[in-house]
Length: 331
Ligand SMILES: Nc1nc2c(ncn2[C@@H]2O[C@H](COP(=O)(O)OP(=O)(O)OP(=O)(O)O)[C@@H](O)[C@H]2O)c(=O)[nH]1
Ligand SMILES: [Mg+2]
Image (cartoon, rainbow, N blue to C red; front, side, top):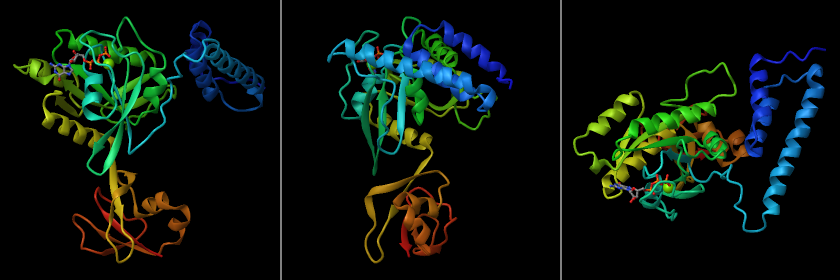
């Protein structure tokens, strides 16, 4: 039986064969396997590829063990925590670590020289009643690109592209970041709606952050940034301007496209400490499912309190919720 492989398979296979870095090779092998149609004609190819994947995994693990206990842990995955995972990327010295330092309890190294950050670092940012996870990353530049950045970015819910408004070469550095990520088949976009023919590409919703705003007194760099990213949401920040950091939090929350829904037991106060997080447009039924699968099946109706509703209005399963709504389930 012919294998009937899609045309982009061969291109990816050439890349796989040429790649030297075992981690990137592993990622490409996994992509090849995902692309391969699953039928009798590809049984042998699938088995070969799975064997290569397992060999590469062993090679990577072995490499880490042989370097002893002080070897850096793998960086290609950070467990999600909180209401969303947001990854900060950008050119060297743009202020990614400073933002993480100001917005979370994490303590990344900050330096007045490029390439200070060598490893990703996660921290939790408080935003009103929730926490959002921010990830600091090493810079992307012609001199350096850490391969583990690709899977890290692919896994995140939102990218913040940090632009250095104090840098004369801001636009070129940003263009390089975009090109490098595109080479890795990651497309930064203002929204995720676009449909792609090639499944190897991944679109990441991106918020633009013009950092070091006070160094751009004339506003020239900010205008240049806005012209470069006309359809994107944008926020300007400085670590010495608390209002700008509050705006950053708000912009990140908005870009995550999530809502917070609070629940209250019948006859008691709402619990504002631990909201249910849903994608924008989430329904009463989805909120119930997050609480408990069984519960979602059993409940009869819910009462709702929130903006634009009558207090205690009765709503059904398919009712679309808004940020800040309070729900009381009745079983
Ligand atoms: N003027 C000004 N300088 C800032 C601001 N935020 C950070 N810096 C300075 O910018 C320099 C670089 O900051 P980092 O946070 O280390 O930048 P980074 O993007 O993490 O750099 P790499 O890890 O090398 O990619 C440091 O000297 C910071 O003190 C700001 O809001 N205004
Ligand atoms: Mg840094």
